[in-house]
Image (tube, rainbow, N blue to C red):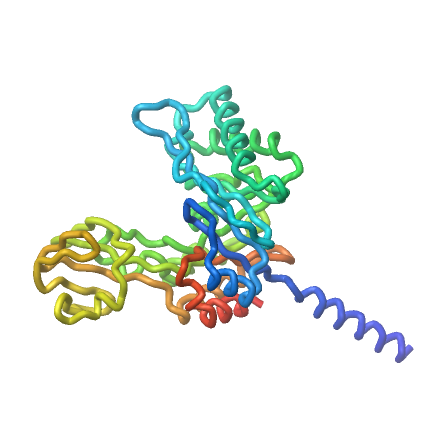
Length: 334
C-alpha cells in the first residue's frame, strides 16, 4: 500500500510539473508596413525564445467619401522567418456603421481575399486575428462579419482583441463569436488629457478592470513596450511626437524638466523637422520594468487557459536593447 501511495504522489508531482512547462508562449507584435528584420532583431527573437509573431497585414478604414471599405497601411513585404506568423487586420469602428447583411458579406470576402494575397504561399494560416474597438452600436455588424470570416477560413483559429472595458463589461459589449480573445493591457489612459501621467501603461487604472469574473473566451495577453512623446500647447494636446527621445529631452539647452516626465521648451526651435514654441510642453511616456512586472502579477490572475500566449507590443529596431527587461517580464508570467 505504501508503494502505491508513493507511486501516486510521484505521478501527481510529475503531471503538475509537466503541465506547467511551456504554459506561457512568448510572442511579439509587428506593426510596420514591411516585415524585414535586421540581424539584431533576429538574434533577439532567438535569444528571447519567441514562438510566434503577430503581424499587421493591413488596416480597413472608411472614408467620408466612400461607402465601401478602403485598405491602407498594407504590408508590402514579408521576409522569410521560421517563427510562425499570425496575420492581424485592424479595422476602424466606423466601417461597421449602417452595414446590411449583403455589405457585411462583401466586406468579409474582400478582407479574406486580401489576407490570402499577402500571406506567404508556403505558410499555413493557423490563426487569424481581428483588431476592432467595437461598441454596442456596431456590435451586431462586427460580430456578423466575424462569423462570415469563419466561413472563409473554416480550419483557422479566429481571434479578436478585447479592450479592458469590453473585458469588464461583457454583458454590455457582448462577447465576439471567435475561438479565443486577446486581452489588450495597454493604451488604458487618455493621451489627450493634460493631467494624465502615463496613457500607455497605468496599473492603477488597469487593476480596476480586472478580477471580476472569468471571461467566456480563452484569452491570450498583450502588454506594451513602446514609448512616445506627447506635445501640449497651453495645456491642450497637439500631437504625438514619436521620434523625440529621452536623450533629446535631457538637453538642458533646449528643455527644462518641469516635473516628473514633463519637459518644456526654453525657446522657439525646430526639432526633427517640427517647429516648437517657447513654453510648449512634452510628456514622455514609456513602460518601465517595474510597472511591467506589476502588470504581469495582475494579469497572471486572469489567465484562463493551459497554454497562454503573452505578446509584447511591438517589435521595433531598438527592441533588442530591452532583452533583459522583456525576458524578466515574460518569466514573471510563469
